Length: 173
Image (cartoon, rainbow, N blue to C red; front, side):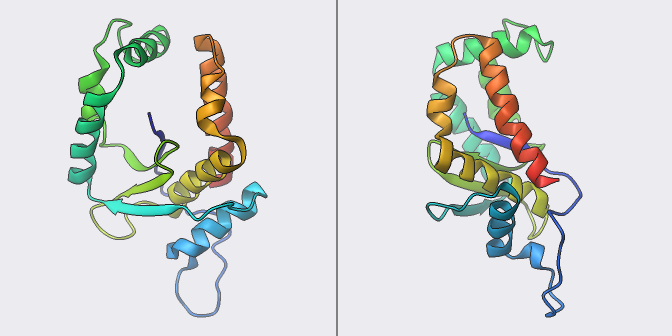
């Protein structure tokens, strides 16, 4: 599953003016640089960023939900079900296929791709884009797939998710 960030209304970082009158936080290079600065990590590889509409993202989510391993779905349902997000025995496939309304962007450590979801340019806040760039930095420096695979309990899984997401949330703020 992809790492997901929910977009907020704030911008990322200092929004410093470069004198051109343009908002630098709308520049993809500025966003990547800002993520690198706040995380104090350099990108080892360039990260591809694609933009798709909410409808396109929804269709992709439906396709991806069909491909998720049944054992992974059960583990997620039990883990998040115990926390009260939904019944432990919930069928997550339809939930994953239709849960795109709140997504501003995602980073996939499987495809190494950031996907920005917006129906109009600039709809996804710069803070959300910085958040996803931080996930790319984490992945390049710490291998998120391997990091998740060393968990043997749901508590370990949730602790790993908290570290990964907490780091990105602090950077986005």
